[in-house]
Length: 164
Image 1 (cartoon, rainbow, N blue to C red):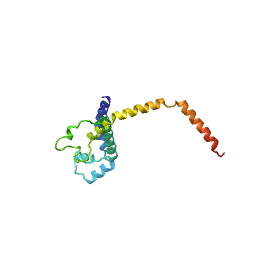
Image 2 (cartoon, rainbow, N blue to C red):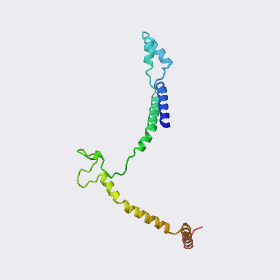
Image 3 (cartoon, helix red, strand yellow):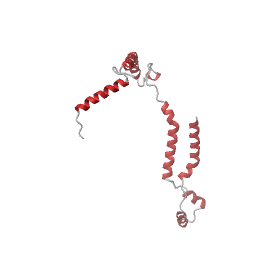
Image 4 (cartoon, rainbow, N blue to C red):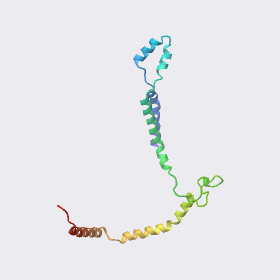
């Protein structure tokens, strides 16, 4: 909620400040040159014509700021929208005439069927995990493994010639 309030306040500040970024005041030499060329143009229309100058660097910075704000506001929602990676029931959009993302040809496996096949392997995977944890628990301790490695290195050092 605090992020949303901060983003909204930054957006309001950007809306107030960005119109001045897009328009640059005309140079003094240009105003004098145009006044000599067109003496019959009213002053209000002259200012209106001169204010149409745009600042490409300011426009690029403003666009980057708007993109940054949009990314900061929508980023967390997009991260949360990762979705389910596993489905055991067929969703409504995979039923009916159009059957979007459903297996329509023989030999094809859709998302739900693949998830069901994987779910059938869960008990076996849990059993293998228990066996692996028991094997690690019953194995040699860290001190025993370290002592065995040091003995192997000593044996290797006896047969290996190290040039000095």
